[in-house]
Length: 124
Image (cartoon, rainbow, N blue to C red; front, top):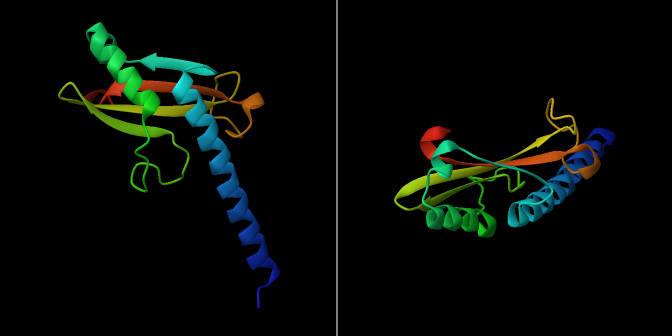
């Protein structure tokens, strides 16, 4: 028999799963379009020849290789890509609108600004 504490934990876990699903959908939409937030490229990315830089940005946009190792919270906020003989990383951070700290609710677009950073692995 389940008690009140067990029911509350179940509700909290269910809400967390719903929140992660909403966050992953928002992160995917931002990553695929590069609109609705900021995109930062580190010096190694900027130094790439144009064709390689375009290929890297496209690889970030179409990334789908999420698994338990690289996406343990199901938020689709990190990925790694091998391109032009190097390892590249991307990540999405969620900030409050003032950009002074993390967003209190990354699932709420009214209070969240997303920033996608693309970097060479040795810059992390």
